[in-house]
Amino acid sequence: MAASKKTPPDLLDTLIQSWPDTLSGQFCLELALSGGMDSVVLLDLLCRWRDERGGPAVSALHVHHGLSPNADDWLAACENWCTDRGVSLRVVRAQISVAGGESLEAEARKVRYQAFADGDKPLIALAHHADDQSETVLLQLLRGGGARALAAMPLLREWQGKQLWRPLLKVGRSQLAAYAAGRNLAWVDDESNADTDHFLRNFLRREVMTRLRERTPSLDKQLARVAQRMADAAEMVDTLAAMDLQQVQRGRELDVPALLLLSAARQRHVVLAWLEQLGLSLPSPEALQSWLSQVQSASANSQPLLEYQSLVLLRYRHRLLALPRLVQEPEWPPCCLVGRNVRLPHGELSWTRGAGGLPADWTGKVIDLLQRGGGEKLPVKVGRKPVKTVFQEAAVPPQLRLDWPLLEDDAGDLLAVPSLGVSIRHAVTAEDGWWPQWQPTAIVSRQ
Image 1 (tube, one colour):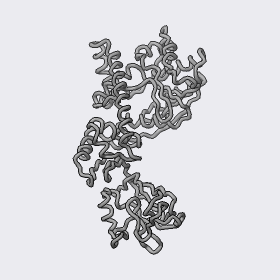
Image 2 (cartoon, helix red, strand yellow; image 1 turned 180 degrees about the horizontal axis):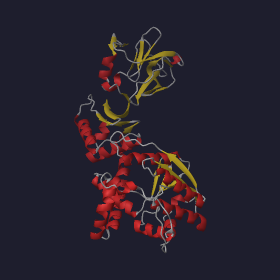
Image 3 (cartoon, helix red, strand yellow; image 1 turned 90 degrees about the vertical axis):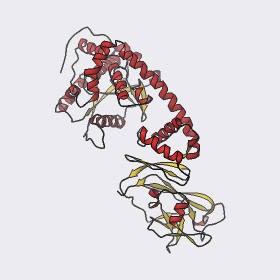
Image 4 (cartoon, one colour; image 1 turned 120 degrees about the vertical axis):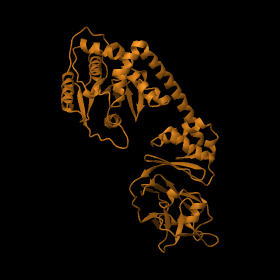
């Protein structure tokens, strides 16, 4: 731990002035307290605001990652500081494992953000400062980030129904250190911050940024300006992508002809906006561009396919689908009721009214819900058509065919292939017939 005494620069007014008007009416917040100097300074400032100026009530969150042999000591220190200031402390103990190519930093960040999401406070205060912002801009540049990545960290961000507030973004690390020394604050030092061999941010902070600031005294101001310009650019791109998405989206899918009317750049951004809206992982720019090139050159009956981590993008008729991969084979219910929707792990069976559907008086009738076994045939006007042919004519991607449900009666006669056809033996001409519809929501993996 470290402690010293100096006349502090008073950052309280700076903190209060950073409080956005949109947060008016917020009476409580939760501080992400790691125990490092930055978060300890913010703890002190927030408690002073509460006690001296009638600021919001303060609670704190400490995530015990268990990655350092000193983690228990850090937790004990945070508990003491919070007790001294009358702040309740929520502790989340996490087990971090690195898998799927993610870095240790990325996994730890996921754990922290999940802890934010699990809390009951609508406002989370984070202790990122101006030096962090500069490092983030350079880090994202080295990683090939786009406008949104280079915009770095905003003062206020809405995330999963919560507000993330960073009141120290215009305060440098040296100012925080002077304040901590003047207030005789103690903090903990994470030994991993000295590791420049494994963590690129540490390398930038310790071996690059200092020399850059010597050569360019206005470096942090310039990088902050870059971040602001990129934030403006990202906002404009996101706004245009949202407008384009409204024009090309059809439910959970994208309309291919409408998409191809857009420029290549707008196609990329509207697909990314669509995937983000669905909560799916985003492919690399190279993979996305390759896939869109296939879509642009493909005929209406082909199915360009892109697989990226757990995400599968494919084409069905004139629509584009984005589906997660289901690693466990779903359990199928033995039957369903006509007119009542059924949600399966890989899709949803729903019903609409229309001519050519099953009889209206079948409402509530129990029928069998089956997975394809092969060789099934659907009665049509002339003879019986193999279900395989039904799929081919409808350009259903092969990846979806095996798990596309079929409906049969007690005698084993095929009643319908949802969304694609109803048996001519049972189809009615009345407008109130029952049409079964199938909406895939995942692709079943059998690798």
